[in-house]
Length: 103
Image (cartoon, rainbow, N blue to C red; front, top):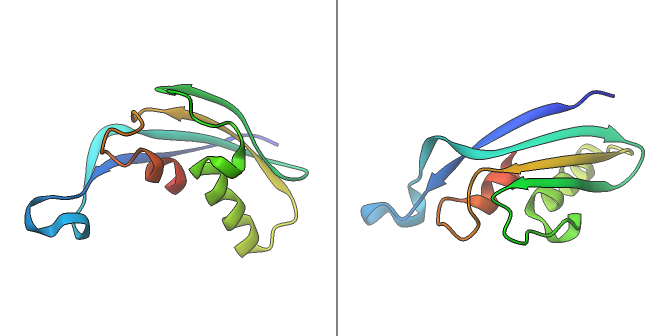
């Protein structure tokens, strides 16, 4: 089966008095996830870009955790293989974990 490509932009919260209630998407910076259906489980086969020691284990990676929950909610029996291209540095305050999970 072929790959699908999903991009999720960086975002910032804590703007003025709105704190985390407000957020703004940042144009051009974000994470890209390539995903395809596999027989079983959640597999992160590759992480490139601004990596800084991100976990390859799906249960420890926000993209893997989100994928697992989506499959469970949709009652899908198969699994997903993912390749993650990090465009947002971890711990940068630009929603790096959220971007991977959203994609």
